[in-house]
Length: 207
Image 1 (cartoon, rainbow, N blue to C red):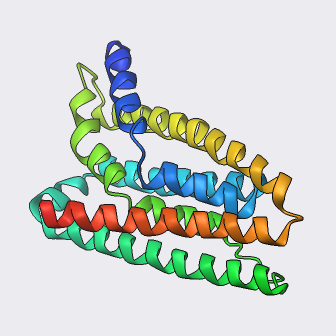
Image 2 (image 1 turned 135 degrees about the vertical axis):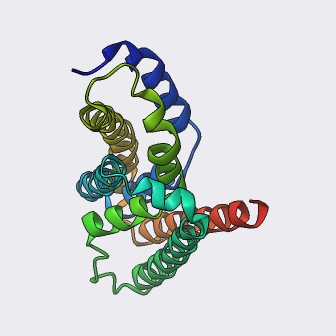
């Protein structure tokens, strides 16, 4: 049997985590600007998949390994920062193609990118490792309790950040026929990726 009395406090904690801009939120904003609404939908499904992997790992008890070896978390963060920088490079390249009139190469692979950004997001890692186990309450089946709570967190993020991505996609749809505007949107997305990578590196140095 699960303990549903923890839900109000749990949902409040989720909102505290989702509120401040992080890699997932900024990534969805960048995807909407760069690829449009359809790309945003694919990307948020990828993020949801990445979150599901962490939730499953936590339920399986793998979170204890990450706690025992904190360097594992730092390694994941570094990989995430490197990946965001690579995305920035690719996006700038697309912007230059747009300016030169050869924007025939689509960045695509939004779903896979969403998965990779999600599994290298330190906020998600820390949430499932540190927060989720605190809301087991009086549940008779801790595994089932964490599975349900993990699903609630994933659903809330998919809805909220998916909405942000789709809204950003409206700007893309309005400006997609303009070569200069498309380039500007790509440069804006690239800037977001670089800032995110810098933020993650700063967190590692200050830790």
